[in-house]
Image 1 (cartoon, rainbow, N blue to C red):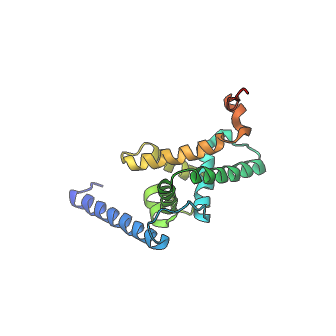
Image 2 (cartoon, rainbow, N blue to C red):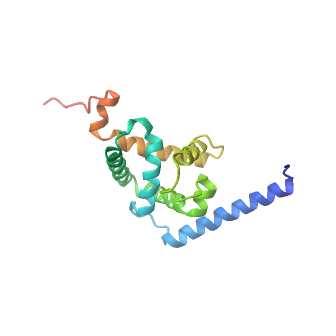
Image 3 (tube, rainbow, N blue to C red):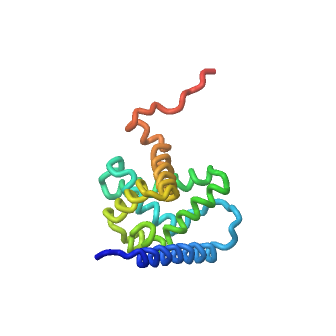
Length: 174
């Protein structure tokens, strides 16, 4: 099957219109564009819960209950980390999670056809790999932000410091 220049342009235009429509829909649902504090809603929680096992891989516990608790703890630590960022940056993170939560954007940008709760590890890994090495710099930056938030949240927990040989902060002598 060969793609003509005309069909390539049509697909590009359809993709651009789809992204614009998704962005407009997201903005309509979210309300005014004023920077506001990050809110970890159910959609953002679902995205993080799906991404954390792929991002952290073997450092997570293998026992199901411990793994679930570790993922939930990391989700809360990500929220705490985002709250420490400037309001404008918090809004950008909120927008990223909002975009990944929208069905059409999730399918088109992430390649994940089902909801995040139903996504397979292979789909999530493929999405992350795609964004990590994408030719569009904005998607690479979004991947790096997700990676840094998740890894930073995980390793900000003193319980995980021994695994990387970090002795903790230097104690000040009195």
